[in-house]
Length: 113
Image (tube, rainbow, N blue to C red; front, side, top):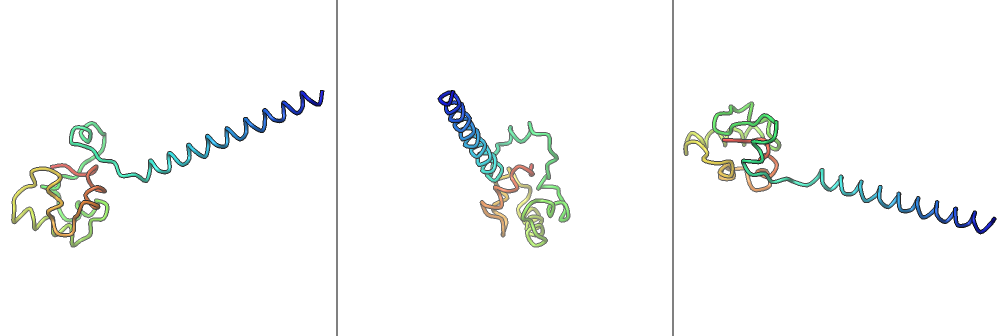
């Protein structure tokens, strides 16, 4: 009788440990996944159901809705358009003063041309 009870206790303990391990792993996976930066090409972005900001036509206030875009950077985008014409693709926005690869990675999923 005690042997069966000990086996049952061990089974419950092992099952609990495995469950706990899986839950911790799942939490870490989703935490890392949410904090990662996703890169999307134009085809993937078009398939997503979100509103995009057209960097060729957006005014200053609309551009400021983008992550990490300040008044100054929004003005720089408009100035760049006025001086150089329309952006040919979204990657061209890194040519704007104040926008580097890091900011581009944050805003790529919100912009279009």
